[in-house]
Length: 415
Image 1 (tube, rainbow, N blue to C red):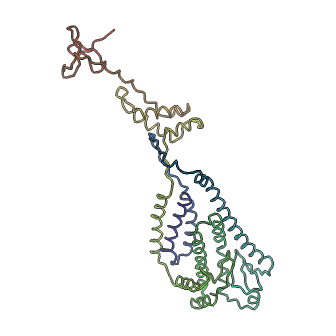
Image 2 (image 1 turned 120 degrees about the horizontal axis):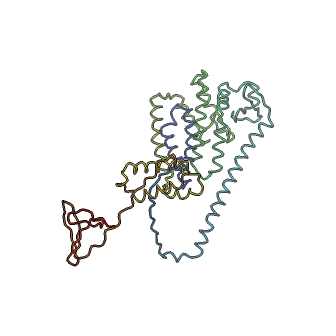
Image 3 (image 1 turned 90 degrees about the vertical axis):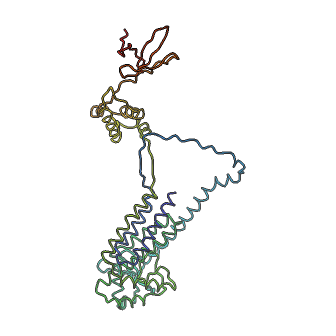
């Protein structure tokens, strides 16, 4: 259930992003939104909302008939081995994606280790003999050695890659890659990964244009680099596209569209406001609801708590205040409240009892009236109803509580 809930949360967050955020020029907000949606999707199903009930509900046992007794032993054996099969399959997936992650990481580290490095400011240019598309991993920028030394690498390309390094986009990439190892069976992570990388390109494009580079010149440069040349999976590249095939130009076109988009403050506020009901809906739908019986909680904690808890003391004081406000002779305490008061009072330390409200004592209930024989009845005396008993020619009068009175309704004192 946890996995299903997290997938559902991530799907709704991603749909919201694709419909309302992706094409807007609020790239920093989108970066944190995508990363935050991952954290929220895995965190919301773990949130528990606890409600306290006064009376435990009686759960009636469910009787299951023997209709399915015919299930043979082979079916039972399969059910026993199914968790092992699924666990084995999951572990194989983790091993495969771990191997791929380590392989990609080693490829990058080998390039850094065995090629010429030129440090410039906060960046390290790694010069490769291979004809590659410039790409970045943390503060390492990978360039073709010949083009770099001949100064034929466009300045706009260097600014683009430096933007990736400055904004530490590799941290996001590593995070999503590690999540894909653990949750490799979740296809949404693949799409989130692609959206995160595409947004990195939006951020780098904006950083270049903010340097005063002409828009048309920069867009023509992107078209020149929009080849099918591949770059390491964990690196950021200027020619990045969601699919390195005939759809590359579609992704370049999307970048062009975003470059020309200016999002107004009103649109930003509206989209931010719409996040509130989305998060509220996800919290309501996919968090856990737990009901705790306050009496059971009290019983379970009686052996491992030093005194009553703050919540228990608040419950006790509330009930004690309620019943102490009633005169003792008229005070009647409900049984469930009396049990609760006694339990919590029994948990209290001497200091807690001293500071708490006094225990609401009450008179014991009157004894039940004696059974009325057949030769009895009721009569009104001075406007009050009394019961009489006729026996051996003598009539006696009683109150409803069985106390004897004279014929005028006055109580007869019995020594």
